[in-house]
Image 1: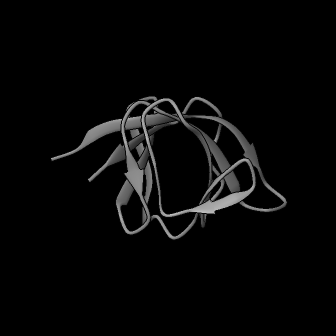
Image 2: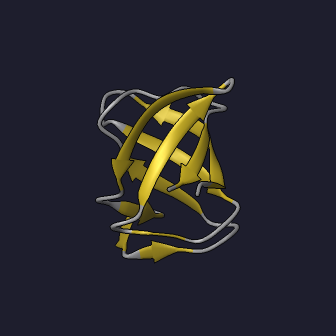
Image 3: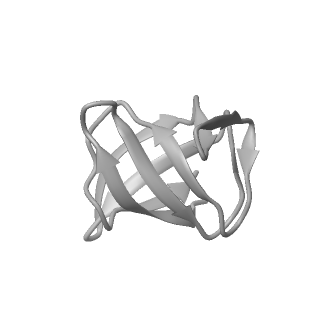
Length: 82
């Protein structure tokens, strides 16, 4: 079962980091799926979370995090936890 944990507000292509505004908690080791316009883009396991350039093991609802991703993702993509 999937539920939405956040939305991509920015993507830094040079460093492969998506900025995600969280609607629910997220932790390293969680599996996430990126969806845009109803289309599934890709899934991956969260390997790194940063808040204000500090590495964290988890983040809570309301946090804005930097998420290292393997593929490019556009602003507005929704992030679901699997």
